Length: 246
Image (cartoon, rainbow, N blue to C red):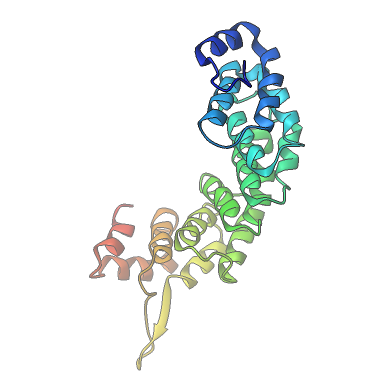
């Protein structure tokens, strides 16, 4: 029925409900030769319909699936939400295709047992989109080693996207230590002009993230007072808002 030119989806869904986990292998077998499109989406929806019992079969398929199908199967596993991430997902974190790594990272970051190791690996990933997944997770709690990697990559121009750099600053700022404060101030204040006056760095998403971090974590620290004061006096509403909201 799955391979029929015009599948009877209503009947198939009833069979999937009745058969349960044993319906997963034929669905996965059909997926191997199914082109992308609505038909593939239907087949994947059957796996989601089976739920957690389908997770082992889906995970086993990851080792032989094409990169495109592996990515979709990882998305499927995220919807199924097995109680623990299958070991095959860890292998996908090292996959040559960055799109596969990205979905594997997203899934592993959702589990407490694999979050920290995945976060550290992802922020150092050569693909910026994979690293961005880790950075977003790090904004809710960033281990010191991951914060160090993020700071280093930003300093070396490792992120071409301004949103990624801004998110990296917010993530690193969750480690409110002396090293982080000095690093954020270095990205906030500059000296220039004939009188060599200290002023704010040019407006950018990174500057707003840095000012927001100072106001959130170091508002009472005298070393941050100059930057916060300059932001409050700025003619830019967005710069004022970055510190005023705190």
